[in-house]
Length: 525
Image 1 (cartoon, rainbow, N blue to C red):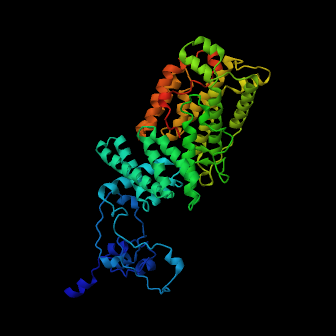
Image 2 (image 1 turned 60 degrees about the horizontal axis):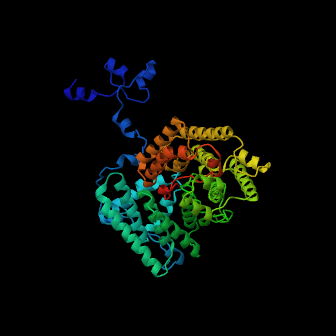
């Protein structure tokens, strides 16, 4: 046989059966002709090149998370971003003219801003806004406030001030100058808008964010000024183009106004209304849990009524109190205050009993977009229990109110042991519920922890629990309102037990020692 012929007969492919016998395989698949004729098991050790080329690998998408914080280099030209739409449209279409056309761009959405502004605005979007709501899908800061800042320079300056201030609180002290600069620009913008009679959504949103910054910075009295201004701007503005945005404004301002009255009460009931007029609009669902506040509007309305009634009761000064403190200040109090008549005591007992029934029977319903949020339902229940504890501490238990209605004409406790046990059970229930939450360092628990810290609990484990949770919230965001709350709770731990000594004196002025004037400007919303 010639050399060329032997070379043609050599094959590197073929089944193992043919290779063992050194026979040229015909390479039919899945069985060659020889194996099929002899009934052999045709085994292929290596697929033919033709078969390998025909094999298809299924497509697998790459997650975008793998590209985060990585540089990606693309070979592109300007022609790659030109529109390739070849369809013919009419030259004039009024409906399409109202829709802004978005041209594709390879740049970051904030590339047109200066470097510092882009960094601060991105931090507000990524680092601050997500923690302002208990729902990632329904966050008005993300869906309403941030888009509005691109059309309102005044609001954008307020957001930049908030971001710079938050970074300062977290240790970036070199941004303090930027925080003051952008806040000053925002204030000047608000003054300019008000001077020309402009009170649009951007102006009110700016006032809201100024209030937001004052609270996070340290709860200076200026946040109350911005709060009152925001409420007045809302009441005087009739044109409301975006209902969802105005609903957010009302929720923020009204909720902070209600909760501010729970921080301290000096007995000045004249600063309140009668508490019967609802602060919410007719279209608001009072039973639905709000994802910003972690409770329903109905619960906040009840908290407001408790504060109003407790403020009225705190003005009581009996002859017994005056005899115990025959000083000039006490004499001024005697002239400005008076004891309640039996009929007034009875009316307050009726109101107290009604509030107890309303808080106990209150129903709080999850919103339709968060029906699976058991943690949100648990937070709302914790705040309901905290409201019941707040009511018990400020106005007494329902047993005390019932005893008055059965014929008593004074506010003496029917049983100190019953009141103490009722309060202890409430405290234990709240602590147990907070401990069961998946995240106990959320700022929405600030008010329940403040109430727990002001009820004069003598249990060291309860006190340690409250402080540990407050320190956890402070470590997460270091908000000024949290720092002030920690100071107020520590002060209450050292003074409440002295002020609430058992006896008729402490009973007659129940609720008059709630909070301390030094911490009256704490925001607890």
